Length: 85
Image (tube, rainbow, N blue to C red):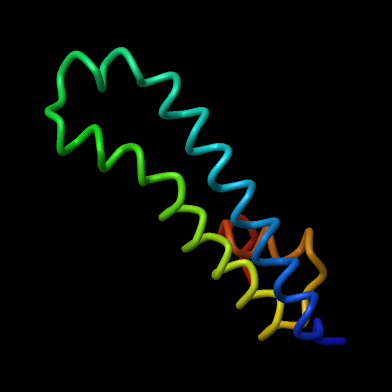
């Protein structure tokens, strides 16, 4: 069974939220290095990185779920590329 249009939006939202949150955690851990070693432009880019990563991963989860007819958990694992086949 393929997810409907509204479920694809939910898949995107879950993928976006997970990727953006994990990217924010990683950047928070790297904050001392970012502030000490990078210029203003790189800091601004780091500020936008969670949104960009979230959009790409959310789109990948939604696409995997829709095209392959996967459930949410299966689509998340497929989007990560952890399972072969």
